[in-house]
Image (cartoon, rainbow, N blue to C red; front, side):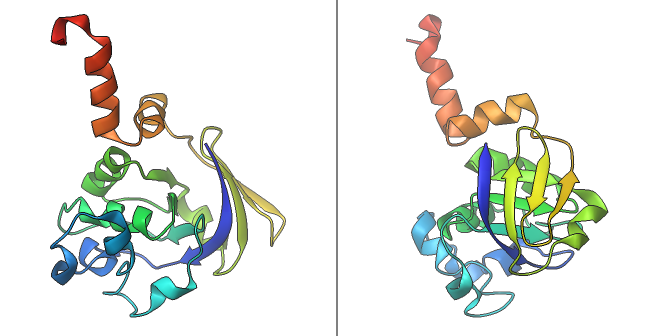
Length: 169
């Protein structure tokens, strides 16, 4: 689980309505939601994002309603990972369930600036800032969450488990 891309930094206490405003919740299509990612925070924000870029956030990212659309919108925008100081608990679980990699880096995340080039090894819990030539060490993605991510999210994970379990056939 290695990622590299440009950092796009947002602040603390970003709620799910800022990530994907309610008026866009008429679909679950990742690409359509991705077009409107962070429209509630800064209209046109998505135009700066390239596929594979990395979202960097402050404290309590994903607070507010528990809508699954928020991590889907981030994925649809082309960002496969969010590095944050911390996550709202329901967003943390929804993110992994939808296939979005999440890393909590604590206060060290404040060292990352908008536009920095990052290389992230989520399995090892290492964030290398190639622009600043620095490294942040954090807790790696838990193994059971890695298993969910490897299947594209919880639905893929459960499908595979059911297919393997002869009792469910």
